[in-house]
Image 1 (cartoon, rainbow, N blue to C red):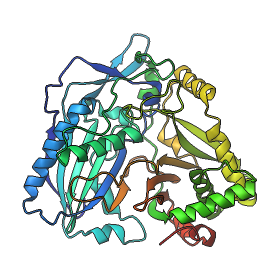
Image 2: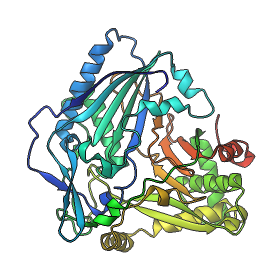
Image 3: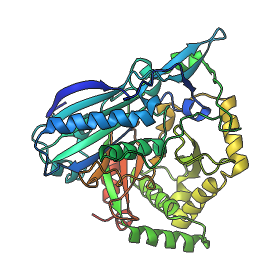
Length: 440
């Protein structure tokens, strides 16, 4: 790790005695993510002006993390397995309070400007995250949660790695928000997590779900992504509104949302930048949130995975020639189709065929895979040093075509992080139609 100095590594446990015999069985949505990487997101803060003793800050962060784990105690546990006589295996969270990993590091000579000013995301950023390169099912002996606090010349970066078979993005940011609240001195958190894992089909406590043992043992580690570059593009509320108006006008409808318009815009631009054959069939993969779609709905604070994958498939000719409104409407149709019956069918299908997603499937050639959401409360994560300056992601789950959505720092704005082949990303930055909606 060039320019990175590891200062300390320790385990942080919940403050109360949370060592129990409790086990939390993974649901079909959790198991779907076993063979991919963890969620890795981090926040950049200005270094507190009043900070005199860095060690005191680190100790305070450990104490507040420990108290936060009282609310999120499964994250202080470990993933465990049971192999059955019929050559199947089931996974659960062992709530043994073994602890979350806490790493303290320093990036000597690295300033906030070194992270924010370059056109492309600097590679050193990846070293601001712990547990890099570990897939979710591989953490049986490793923490479900690891955080790294990296000191910069004029800032602090708090990077968080959380097992994706244990949580989704909504749960991830609820934890991050809660930790910052406890660190600020609050006695209670805004959203107490609901820790029971319910069967997402019938609302009962989830029973063990068995996977063929061969699915795990035969998982290939041969997926090696091509050399990638990353870049963050900023879209203002006004520019997004213009895209939405254009998409709805072209499609003669009022049903296309701001996010669907933005998705259509980036899918068309990336397809142009890749110079694909005009009759090639490609996918746009998006996570569909289930909390509000289930009957009865899950609470927003449900701690686990409540997502399924929606796939929009179009031919490149249609994407390039039919216009923004056509593509946005096709995205709208897929998202809108996930009403009560389709959600139930999708969850039942996963139970019948519980084979997890793989990195190779997510990184299918010439497709786009969308992760995270501009609706997450990123900039409300305030440890008492002021709101974050920026949000970035780690190296986990990166491949050609990975696109990560974040809320922008201004209300209604969106930051989009692209992971693409260098030549594609360069072409995207030179695409006048695409860049007309981007604010530098």
